[in-house]
Image 1 (tube, one colour):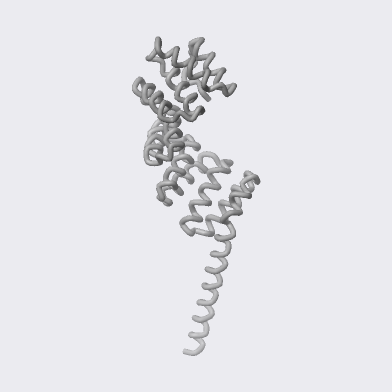
Image 2 (cartoon, helix red, strand yellow):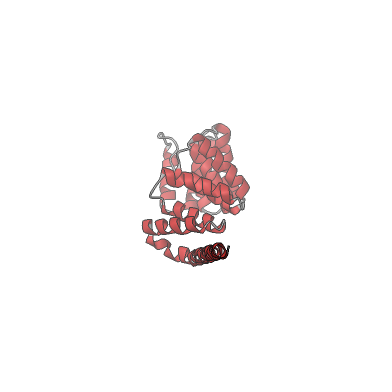
Length: 213
């Protein structure tokens, strides 16, 4: 979760333990002390960014990730976590760009595709959101959250058959999603019924028209 390299300094190992125990402020102090003498440590900056994020110090977390990226911008976890920071700040455009950078490094990461989909959704780009969620569930067929997000994106686009189908699949994978799904699935089902009633009405009108010709 918080290790970037295998060879950790004792100070970093101590900080990681503090993070694992939820002692983020103490970890921040430990890592800042370490980085004064070792500003070249990607792992130090990464873990500082992580601890600052958990402590909801988002601007400082972004600066820590930037320090790490200045040393090596080819590490997936740095871009992924920086995207998470921007998302927490509701800066969805910058979050999207970070997740896209992460996916350039590892295009097989389902969570990054799901998070990218969330960014597109927040930016009101429903089609791109659906495409991203589709990539996520293709990579991880048991990814209930991504199936739910895909269903919800189809609902917003008024693609009700797909919305209902993917919502039901998400619910099979994780019954705890029922409360979220129940907030909108009845709307999709009602729209489907209305559409089918309208289609049936139009079919009958066409048949009557043929009979009178």
